[in-house]
Image 1 (spheres, rainbow, N blue to C red):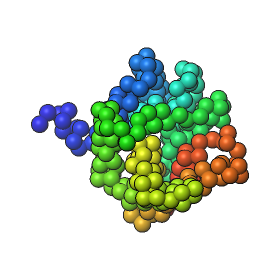
Image 2 (image 1 turned 180 degrees about the horizontal axis):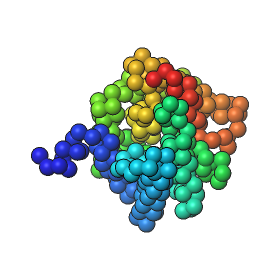
Image 3 (image 1 turned 30 degrees about the vertical axis):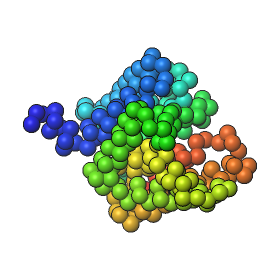
Image 4 (image 1 turned 120 degrees about the vertical axis):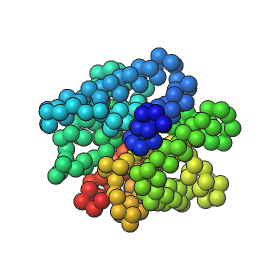
Length: 268
């Protein structure tokens, strides 16, 4: 077995990077090639540089920034496609600033990618587009759709099996699907399944909600965490639909995730 194969097999972060990159390549065919390269290079480049600088400032050490690469890929897959280079820089700096400096007893509190994107909304009024996960739908049997779903399933395997987050993933998907259908005008098994296997929901659950550093380890708390984030996500959507909350509020899924991070920080 080669060294590279050994690293890929035994380091879940490296495997996650590989699969996120595959997901990015698969979905990037839906946007201009120059735009996909622009997002890929800037988002990863800025997060890696910021993480290296911030960590050196804190600990005077250099390291392989696996987590920064993952955060950069996530931002690239979610960010507003119209974002300029300096806006991407600010979002990446905010994400890595949260990772490095917003800690208690050395532990992360808030999801870095979600935090950076919320800062992008506050400063620049940039709304996350979730462009990659919403380009295709599972109903259409095409090569891009098949590759997209396979890469999502592979990411789900790493999250559930390697990171042991299957309670979080299952509880969120189950509760969010049920709540979304109950809050809608019509209830049916088809609509329930459609929500459950939606690429956008799967991506959010596997990559964001089950993020290993900011979600619970304990199985019971994973279930509660998944339920809470699902409940808040569904309630935010319902409140916007009923005009209880303004339609121009920050991304509701990211807000629900950050609330879950805060609530379960001491109970992981």
